[in-house]
Length: 260
Image (cartoon, rainbow, N blue to C red; front, side, top):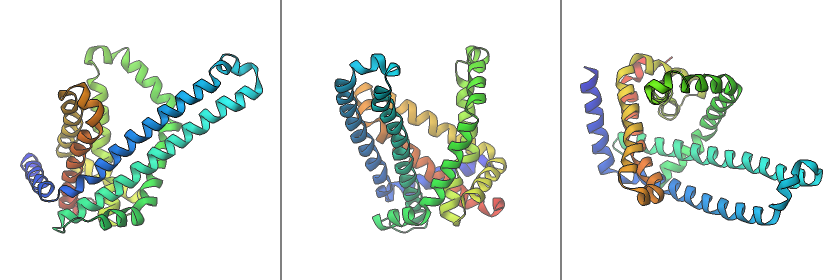
């Protein structure tokens, strides 16, 4: 039964994580980077508004103000996007490589994390950009569908439909970075393999993805506002990392059935 297999993978993942707590260090580093970044962003924003606050009132009536204010905001937005995308991909590929090593019974070390980044960064970065470009191109139709959903079905489902859509996307796409690292695939082949795994093992991955989403969100809130604000990234990151490890175990067990 698929449920028994999932329980076995969850148990094995818990054993691996408890013996190799170092696999969670990148999550702590990522949380620290995020906190430091937003502190710097807050300081820069305050300074920016102190210097240019009055100019914002007539920004569109003055070409110089437009270049001085709007252009830096656009450049800053692109820089923030690239920063979080690059850092996110680095943490992802390095961490997945640590999970792979730990699942093979090898003690994780920092060198494995950096080797994962060195070997797989550009593949996962390229695949991530592809996803983002597709979402950008389809942004208007997606926005229209979300608005229609919100004012029709969303009123009755109280948002559960959006959660279902997010979980559904996770079922088919959560394993593609794992396929890149574990089987040394290119991004397109890895995405195809992940989709095939989702079709082949839908209910098992659905339960894992739903559990990861619900536990990571509601466990953080359960500790109260202060902990949620200060430690939310880390707590949520550890939970998602654990379920990523379990997904890797699922992939390793099923990959001979889904290689394309």
